[in-house]
Image 1: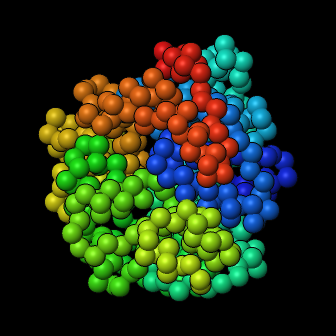
Image 2: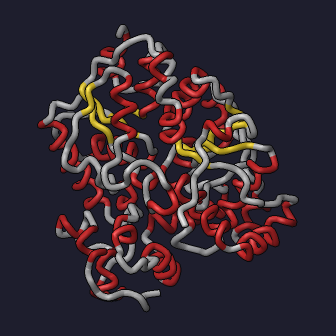
Image 3: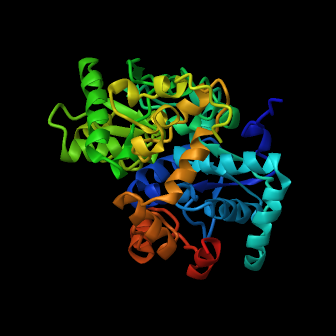
Length: 292
Length: 120
């Protein structure tokens, strides 16, 4: 039986929204959080802080089955505050949704989690929604054009955050084999978005923890492909994809630098925010987008 | 967990690393876990999605990874989570100073006693 995932808008009136940025964005990419908040505010979605949040638990999966308690802790905190979560990375989204999926199929799972959460005075009922920012923006794709003030004259390509689409049974978003939503959102801004062979392939960023040379080699192959297509900037929607681009171009890659920007930064520019407001760092891109 | 595996090789064929000649976790069903670096996987889930038998490959991977030593980066991230609740060395005082400068609200971190309890 296929369950129907409630759309983000459908839940809008019931719960407040908190942005769950996650460790990597908190630590390294504040611009993703800043730009997301600018865009969400423009869309009329107020964002509230989720206090005492921790790592989503995704990182712990390969070390301990206790990762579910970390994920459930964050979801229970959100429940206690009547909040749905908007996530920014594929890993956080995937970990939370894996847990939610397991809990809808196994009530004993929920009982076990609540035994652990009880001393913390938290309860988990699996009642909130977790959506990645891409899903939220997709739900607002008819509203976004009305809020745009300028066309962004850039040649771009997207890096699809694979964990937002897979496993298909759990994520139920877009076409996992050929995701379209991200490119469609980019094109709303007036930017050109080119297709390329490795567009739907995982970025490989996680592999830096196992074998850096493999991860960098994957990044290099992608950049060489995008260089030939004349791409000026790569649009990302996950801290991990962005990290690979940032790191490997800083330390390893000797070809033409192709800076990455987060999707909400691109949409923010089209909405009339300045590169400074959106914390766009790359100097060339910043100049390019200054007076569009 | 592999009871329903029919050795069709869809997992290996669908893996983007294998297609570039890089031996990955997706080779475990055909080659065995002792022949493969089980950390050579970036969690894209394609192998599991492509499995015609519905073998829970990613769950199996997690179980294998839990049994053995972790590569340095993974071990360090896990150590940091136990210490501060985040998988990166976040110093909340300096991070919050910066956050306020750029117009973001300060982060209220998780209590260390709570982390200990969750990961006990």
